[in-house]
Amino acid sequence: MIIYNETSSDFISHIYENKIGYVLKENVFKRMNKVVSESELRSWENSLPQMAKVLRDAGLKKDTHVLLEYKLPSTEKRIDFLITGRDQKGKKNAMIIELKQWNKAKAAEGNGIVRTFLGGRERETVHPSYQASSYKRFLLNFNESLYTDTSIQLSSCAFLHNYIQNPNSEPLLDKRYKGYLDESPLFFQFNDRDLAKRIKNLVSEGQGGSIAEAIEHGRIRPSKKLVETVGSLIEGNEEFILLDEQKVAYEKVVSLYNKLETQTNQKHVIIIKGGPGTGKSVIGLNLMSHLLKSDAYAEYITPNQAFREILRKKLVGKSSHVEVRDLFKGSASYVQTPKDYFDVLICDEAHRLKEHGHMKKKIEGENQATQIIRSSKVSVFFVDDMQIISKKDIGSVKLIEEEAKKLEADIHVVELESQYRCSGSGNYISWLNSLLGFTEVEVPLEGEFEFKVVSNPNELVEEIIEKRGGRLLAGYAWDWTKNAPFGQLPNDVVIEEHNFALPWNDPNRIDWAIHPDCANQIGCIHTVQGLEMDYVGVIIGKDLGYDPETNSIIIRREEFKDKGARPAKPKKGQDNPLFDLVRNTYKTLMTRGMKGCYVYCCDEELGRYLKKKSKL
Image (cartoon, rainbow, N blue to C red; front, top):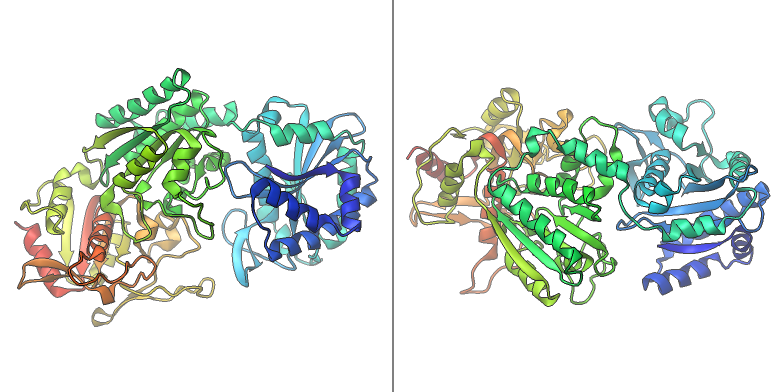
């Protein structure tokens, strides 16, 4: 969707008549039924007059076209400024210009990452040249008009109109960003004439209307090149081979997609139920590859950002195909998506779906499950009710079935049972269910999976991190210091009697679970759900305990520190929903290991209980 598509002469007139803010505000309301915030309005009124001056100096023909606020399909990202036209040789050109109001920035660790002042404090963000380049690559990989009509040449750059370049050592021009700067040059405050010259060279002869029209109305489909890339990354990878009921679930989805040719108006919802380690993501990634090759318009959804980032990195690995990232979306991406816009949407970790996304207005009568079902002809939900770990998590099997019925979708349920994590030990999962009181059946712990209860949290560091290269995890039984100074993680997880103190995982490292610099940080449930490691060490806080008098697992509300996840205190006689959330949390943490799990319990009685149960 494009908010504004006008000739360059009309754009300049709107600027000089002080109408640009009004015109954009009206267009946003008409096309998106959305009210523009004051900050967004100020941003337009600060940046767009700078571009009007540049276009005036470029001396363009009147029918060059300006496109503003192009919303990248099925994302929340928008391209600030696009200009289209022909050069002096008659070649068609479209130029992306990323606009920034920054005054200064610093180089930062990470590929294409910088630090600057945003939202009231200094934050990490992407380099403007990286951002412009990524938007260009997105269009080239998803806009059919651009990847089929190679006569339209797409280029990109960034314009920091308030930023005075440091003549001695400019951080944004550091050699670490050279690749992105070569692809998308950076223009500072006093480079406006250079930018005008670049624009003139590309679009000075006008005739931009048809080019703008092709971009605005181009069908959104992954390009053949991108489809082949996804297939090549999965095929031959032993990690993604389908076994037994994984294959059954996969074929169920494929067969329902194939029926769309004859049942064009019938929606299908497939619910694939499976506990930790049953290979849900393996099925989902194989489906993604097959569907894209079949010319389906499909996307892969994960509500958990950390899990999404690890999946992307696992799939892409060391290859240069970063565009694959654009096929992976968060669950809040479908609020405004039209009905049946996608052929298939695959939602992994669907138990983490919410009523609505962060900072998103809720549409009456809809939640994230509704939006996914509405937006696609076939919806696939991988779900495990026993991994719901917050009052905000709504994605149960029951809810998905209810939403599917409301939208008159056919419902199909497939169950996964085989275990591919925990050394393939279904016994360990059964034992854990018995341990935590999910089942009353007494189960002895057997098999190859390493489980051990230690008496000191420092022993976890030695056994899991130093000897086995694993990760430490903990329940949310310690407060988390928010907005700590960059690079200074406070030691929030403190166990005084053992002189133990380590920080929670770095919130700036979405890939915490695999990043080598994060080994001595402790992962919480929100950053590890869906992930797996060879070995994990789990610190069970005092939010979970054991009462020897009643011979039962107990929870302590005052020790559960995740206030955003904590449900209201139940009235007398009502079940306590926090009981299941805490148990689900520790079951999830204790099933992240492929080979082993070591545990330290802050509650001594619980430690004795676990030792006894593990030796039955």
